[in-house]
Amino acid sequence: MRETVLAVKDLCKVYGNVVALDGISLEVQQGEIYGLLGPNGAGKTTALECVEGIRRADSGSIDVLGVDPSRQPRKLYDLIGVQLQTSGLPDCMRVDEAMGIFCAYHGVAARYELLERLGLAEKRHSQYRALSTGQQRRLSLALAVAHQPPLLLMDEPTAGLDVESRTELHQMMLELKEGGTTIILATHDMAEAEKMAGRVSILVGGRIVATGTPRELTTAGSGLTKVSVRSEQSVLGNDGVAFPAVSQCALKEGYAIYYSTDPAPTVSAILGYLDAQNDRLIDLRVERPSLEERFLEITQMGGAQ
Amino acid sequence: MTAFAKHFAYEFRSGTRNPSLLLMNYLFPLGFYLMMALIMTQINPAFKETMVPAMAIFGALSSAVLGLPGTLVAARDTGIFRSYKINSVPAFSIVAIPVVTTVFQVLVVTALITITAPLFKGTLPAHWVNFALVTAVMAFSFSAMGALIGVVSTDSRYTVLYSQLIFLPSALLGGLMMPMDILPASMQRISALLPATQAMQAFEGLGLGRQAALDPWTSLLILSASGLLAFALAIYLFSWDSRNTSQRGHPALAILALAPCLAGAFLL
Image 1: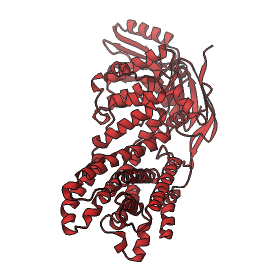
Image 2: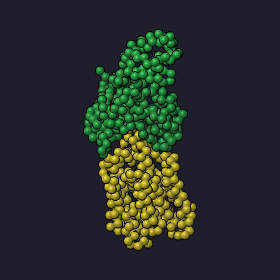
Image 3: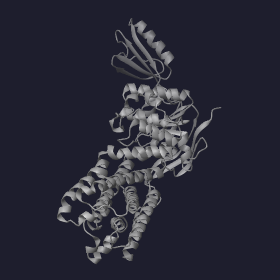
């Protein structure tokens, strides 16, 4: 059985009249990438900041490998690496100086090879203000992992990154995971969460309203599978024919789209109908609902699951 | 210690890399010194006798009271302290390193002023060891006050306000431009409340070997006590984050740093 790296229980945090966290609980196991999803103001960043020891929760408990962030901050920062959503370094601090200073504070040798790995070798002597947003994010990641923490917390890590940088970052996250690092990923990007996270929690209004693997979450929704069909003569969709298990039908960009509760008989019937109409199939796609669709479904319901 | 030393080395270099720090640490005080040495010595020849300590104090006020607080406030507001915190940088280092750095910047400027003073017929210190001691105490005391202003300022507008509350009276009444003993008695009492006055009295009595209006050793003691109190309060009141308002004490506690000066004013 894998070790529990992070255990959060009944965590609450209130700012004035605003309940930022309303009793969230979660457990993250060693070596997994755990996604925290939620709309703006859902409490993702507050939850992470409590785990990071930046904020103190009003009630509840946090355990990071046996360490309470609010009581043992120095021990905590040897166990976690953090890529903050909004963080900065002094404008005139050079990349190599940042690596040297922070590694020294962590008590480890400076890991300049990480700068090369993250495409910052040429910027090693550049000041922070001369870096692009993507380079600043990569430097932040390099600093977060330089002391090889067992838990890495990433808040919107790919915001502002171009496609290439995002792919590189995802690759590095997978390598860290392979090496045994546990990653908590707070993101708005559903595709990123679906691709990277083994398990996901969706926060709405400071509460966790759904937890599971991306597949579990999507199949726990309305259960409708999307069947998109394109044919030579486009006989589908216009003729009012009903197919088994289909609850909704639409036409979009030359495709007849059916939402089915049981795709096997639906597909079989569609193919039979096309054959009977002497129409030839060009394209057929059967897609389960995406995490994004499930996320929208949950958040539009206000998390009332 | 390696981490502290590396961090200090960076901060010291940033004193010339950062344009606003370069201005406040070097360009403004040395430019003002040149102007005063060229003009004031013509208008008031007696100024030559106190030019070195007066300009050293002015340089310290510029670096520590005008320059240092703003960098702390900006660093807190832009999330730099949050980055430091998650990277294991202790709060003590965040306050102490700018203070130590500013002390060194002040020593460099004071050395430049002292070395070049003979070019303008400025009087050199009579007691070099005492002069160095007063310079070091003054640099630390002013830098600690600058750090305290930075720590308690909620934003840059308050930083400017608090800094000017120290800087302007110090420049005008601290004995830098005119001797304290020619001020009216009531103004002398107000003047004695200023750390710059205590520094000037210590320089005059201990460094230049002149008759000072206040006992120079008492002035040095007051300056040291103010500096130590300011430093301790800056550490105590430090907060990592402008969005996270939890503080260990009320910012008004910062006024305690001036308590030794207040006591000094009663002793006058």
